[in-house]
Amino acid sequence: MSTRTSVVGALLGILAILAGAAGPVLADHKPAASIPTAALIQPADFTATLNAPAASKPLILQVGFRKAYLQAHIPGSEYVGAASEEDGVKVLRERVATLHKDRAIVIYCGCCPWSKCPNIAAAYDTLQQLGFTNVKVIYIADDFGTNWVDQGFPTAKGS
Amino acid sequence: MRGSRIAACALGLLLAGVAWALGPGDVAPDFALTDFNGKPMRLADYRGKLVLLNFWASWCGPCLEEMPRLSALQHNYGPLGLQVIGVSMDDEAAPAKQLLVKRPVNYPIGLGDDKLGERYGGILGLPQSFLIDRHGRILARYKGEADLSQIEAAIKSQFTAPRH
Image 1 (cartoon, rainbow over the protein chains, first blue to last red):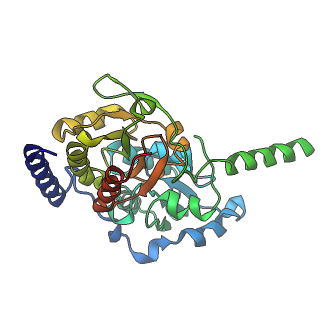
Image 2 (cartoon, rainbow over the protein chains, first blue to last red):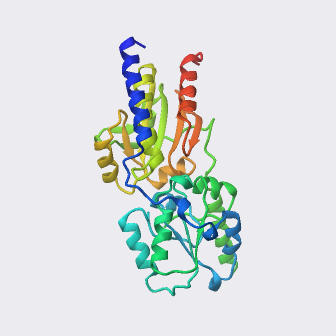
Image 3 (cartoon, chains in turn red, yellow):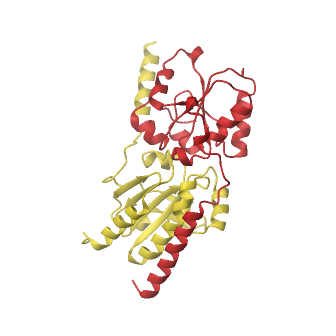
């Protein structure tokens, strides 16, 4: 590599580090860590619920991105959309509008590592604000592929 | 009754048959997209180059954090034969294009879909990157927040190792 190329490369590297330090240009989102621990459920524990009689099953909602849902999702779960976006929150509100406030609802995302997920806390907060008292959140530490599909848990695909 | 059981079994086998385990040593599935500048973007056209294929989305914080560094890799190693390729998994191209106006990169990016994600073993979390050798075989798969110094080391090793 020439000296000029190296210098430009070094400058790009510095800019990259500065950009990384400054964080993304995304609007700030409420961190998943804001969700109370008592509301969390581990993926392995939740799989038992999938075999429960239909009448006692919770409403399961995926609040992440559509292209992931189409590839793989929890059987019986419904796609409502990214809760970090207005459209996603709107669909979520509409989906639960007619439900009793004590209806069991389970939400999950898995789009990104838990600490960086822009959707899950937004969805949880929305349901809290609407007065739902029985909301659980599946704790997906890394992503849906790693913590659900790769573990061999039941998976469906398509819309 | 028997027919419905057979159908249920077939559905089960279908779901179980999704190829989730694409990784090192596998041939990287070819694809043809149009990049956001309107140019064809086909993986096979990069045979002979080392390819870093990066799946991302405009709403994904970790993705945006690593993109300037991917640009730096393209700048530093492009002359040696590296080509970074981006595939946006946004629902639509518009938010990704808008973001790239504010944060331009120096490598081509096109819009992917769920079918492409499935062919790559399931892109069920972002970011995800694949390092693909000059013959189109996957050298490494990086899921989640990757250690970019580790990726750079892998790239360097490809340019210092004897070519086959």
